[in-house]
Image 1: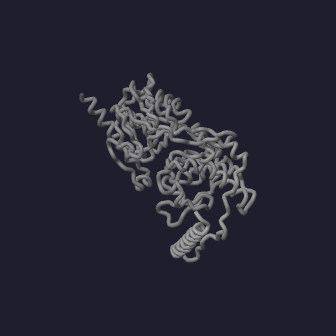
Image 2: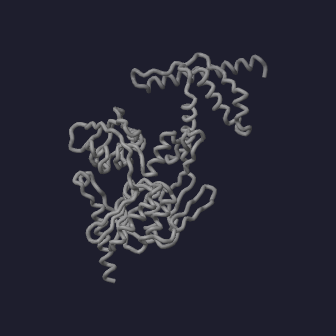
Image 3: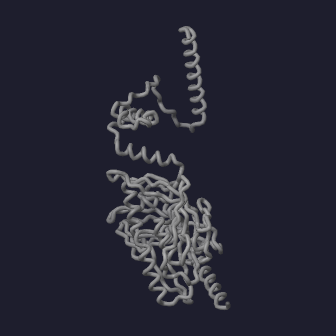
Length: 421
């Protein structure tokens, strides 16, 4: 190509770029609200920064081309960002967070060191916080019930309270699970919650001193009519032993039927769900774990369950997710129990929590999908109860539990039919 033609082409390209820039600015300017400004750009676009030999050498050879833009961006931030020095640790954590978010999977995430610590504490049955069961499936973090003698109960939080601000920060639009994490914090520290309460014209503000909370994940009691009631709130380190202890006490009282309450149980360990299911089923498959490469693991019932024959009803709702859906799905597939309530959350995937070096948190990555014994997938579908019944805000305010009432009714009907046969 001769010099004259080359010069003409360059001029044409520059004119296109300039006209495009002005057109873009014109359109953008008219789309922006009054008072908003476009960013101020340098007149001359600099060449990409040079990548150091050290950066090149520490990147695997087969990934050097792929990571070239990353190192260029890293160097731009370090060389040109206005507020120096930048925090390399935050940049590193942000890069990991962005990488995991790019998967487009809401159940895969980066857990920073504090989040990872908190998540493990909760599964151990001990954590620092205000001591309340909460609903994270709503627009705002909502109190289900304060725990007895907890900081939440002491200050007067009630069922149905919606947390709209935490320490003055507006929670509108923030995922309720993220809001829940903001409520947690070291024992002895203070958190201020602003809540909306039905029947109150103005928001209420509560200043709460966090405490170390110890909560059982599995508890039981006897109801009227010889019915045993067991509630499991999570599938953690101590759940299996706590469940066995509760069942031993209840079964010693010769109950006629049993209600298993898995409402608002967000899940936990897969192995714990197998152990819990095994307390109610004699034999068979609990679930199939299906990997992306076609590999499949089969989890069988562990023999020796303490309540494998007693008539059962399981309570589920929109907060029943993950491990609690594994249990509910297996019991439903085998006809071992009737499900009562409303459709469950629909989380049918398995996550691996992989700790990172130097206590830098963990990466939570979806590694498989699980299927019920009849090979049903519930991911983003949920489990449909055999008997559908809702709990309204009016019920909560009146401290009524129509789902539990229905579970008792269904169980009594099952016992009547069994007695007549």
